Length: 199
Length: 407
Image (tube, rainbow over all chains, first blue to last red; front, side, top):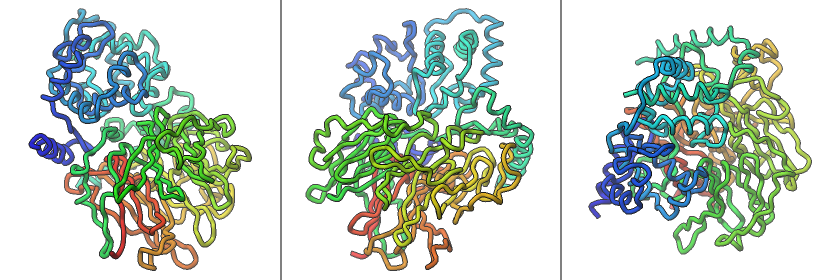
């Protein structure tokens, strides 16, 4: 199968060059077809840029991040309806294909309010204090299991950061719960505003 | 290369952390586990834990061909399609049970007609790393849950509802370093680790950084080793019945400090010194406690800085050459908190007739790509099978390799 050979070549290249260890394994074209078939775009936007409140944009996330979250949904470990139900029956390969598709899409903003100088400055200071850029990288584009933050919807960032703080969500480890420990609602709002205003 | 300047950087970092009182550390909002104890001088470091891989890796994409073993040994793929495969135990029937962490599954791998069949027998658990078999029952230990599947061999296809023994064991619920290695000792008790819920901190030394044992029903908790930061692998010397254990050293004290360690627990309750000391190195981040390390038991071997020395077993088989009998195989999952990767292999600790460690040598290599500072797999556990072959689990690839000798 030519597809298998191509995928194998991709994996070998990724294993050698991706940060850390094994990397991308998905096929973006297959992922695009699957996203259409499953109508993922109804909520997340046809190009992975969400126009729906509290629904995250997926365009341009690191491929590993999307793969890992879909697996956590499918396995019933990240219990955020309707995603656990919607991911039932996806094979590992299909998950990786979906991840490759959304990772390949250009990130961007569907809608964004004007910048609030005071909240932006407070968010910038908080991002510095919490050292967000260490893992999410200085431009907050994310890497490996750490998601892209720039381009994300501000309301979704508030939602996700609140869940991490309250311990109702964990990632593939508990680091975000520790990062967000004791951060106030006002601070979360500022941090989300700052991140959403990044280019 | 960059090592000399990094060495200076680490030294400055130590000096900085020296002035941080341990009490102040405890009162602040906790830093994320991976960043805790990091001196300001290393704030700009981009080191972060590697992402897990939770999807299956097809057999033809595994790094099997890259694996190297000593002359006369053979290494081959034994099983694949078990994402996140970590700790292993074998039942009397030869079924290998395998725990995971993030993926929340437990696998049963059986041999059918020369092929291996992988079944998922439990899921949706929180880091079910610990697996142990006794009297036909499989014990699964998740972070703070203990489940017992009675008569598991007869119901691999439909394991049913396990006996929930969580309340009887009363384990702490912290997620950080809360995953367990578990095994039954020669005394019939169930042993497991309780890791420290931080990188480096003041904590209750009676409840964490321990190896503990229980009666199989969860009663009679006893501290077997104290001041042992996080041991995710131990075994008993087949000649002396003494408990031996690996231990993970803390992060952010420099590329080469401290080292992971191998411990020989000569008496129940022995104290190995964490958080004050690691192999005789007085940790400056903790200002309480004794000024020196003289009162603590010392490890019997150093296993390298940040290598994540995890699963270990004495070699009790007869298939390998006589020189390997009663030596210790140790899986080193590999580093993240070090600029040059370390570990990602299986080593063998060589013991003399008195049980003293006289060397630690590479045994399974090829998963660390030195030229590119990349890794191809992460060995977590080793298991000596009844036929004398050695299984090695590769968590990153969801695969298990088999090492044999001779024909």
